[in-house]
Image (tube, rainbow over all chains, first blue to last red):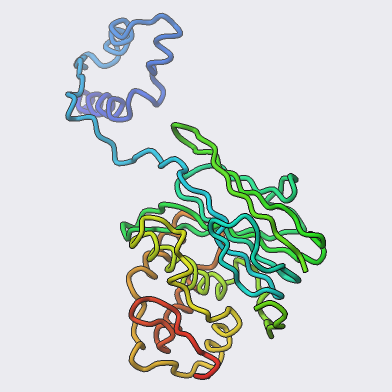
Length: 190
Length: 125
């Protein structure tokens, strides 16, 4: 019974990658302790333990997770204000109509990354009292995986940008090639 | 639209309010999906959006009158998927409430078979 319990314990240690209360590969490397030596120490406690030198074949390299796609598009695509109504701003350099009163700006970012918003070069923190922020994941192709995000920014343009301003949205990919993309829009105010 | 003063009594609802999240799905996310699926880019999203304003959308929901019987149906797959991915992977918003609004909007026939918000609520409600 005791033997069975010992085998079970060692099996569990193997299953959890020798990671809990045992020796990790990094530990081995930093302490100059060889795998064989570590195994000998382990065998004193678990005599029936076996060392298996397992290397996965090439076609066994798989994972249930994939790296998040890099950012490939940043588009300030819509601006709404009480004065102008909703305006399509995709690909434009400035708002077709001046904004006024309550205003919302929407950016679509395709891919995953850190994102930063600036008004006339001043960074807008997410906890800013002048602005309200929101984000929504978007699945473009119906596979239930988020491909990009819509970021909304709301503020009172009469108070925040009475003379208009240049809004910029920048994104830096989480993963390779760690690229930076941005879009800007000159927002005119009535 | 220039010079026109809209009666947008509710336009400044929080961006994270359930009604605005529902509206933004129907009138921003869906057009973006359509544009991407048809052209590989979102730049033509406005071709697939509705002129229905947020205030009109909200008023129609509050009146709860049938907008178009032919389009009345249960929530479609893309709306359900939108709820699912955002409930699980993004922080903000009460997505259960957003789903209730979808049920109401689809049930009242406010979304046509192409997934576009119907025009002309003012005439309908």
